[in-house]
Image 1: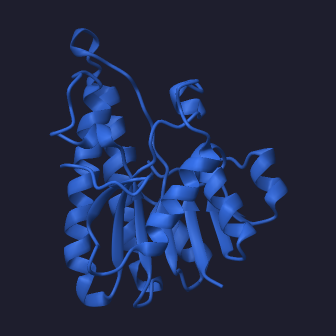
Image 2: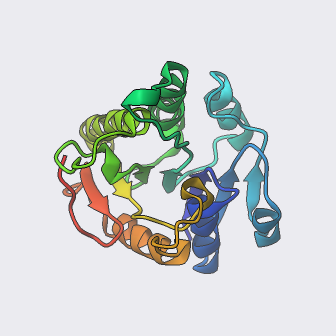
Length: 221
């Protein structure tokens, strides 16, 4: 049985990660600001009241975990604020950088001592962070923050190789969640997470640092 930590666990993809990990017998630690009734109903361990935008959050989470071994860390929390060239919001861009790129990096750093050789780190990113795949423009803050997360993930893969920790950089696909207003063209969270867990399960040190779609497709940088 693996011990898996999931951030942004109260709804959407994070909630579905918790549900599927628990269903297969893993121990789940769900991290969020406020637990949802759906998360509480799962009966997993919940560490609530944690805002990843706050500088003291990584240290507080480490203190709460009290040295708990972490076999899989899934850094899923993030925000999306749509904006185009005509309505750029500098503060919104900064906030997306802080939550989507800087917060996962700082949390990964803080949790490393609890991740043994063979552990896996999964960063939830987006193909909107692919420069080669950008054919529609716009979404400045979100795209920029996800490019930053992608390069952080690649550097983590290199730096953590000697410690035996593999890193997956994952795009869930277009998923019907609140973040995208339950877009009817999206796939169900259940389908997305099934694919994402398959990618994490298949992750090795040899494939560490790869950028994957939840369907297993390698994505361009």
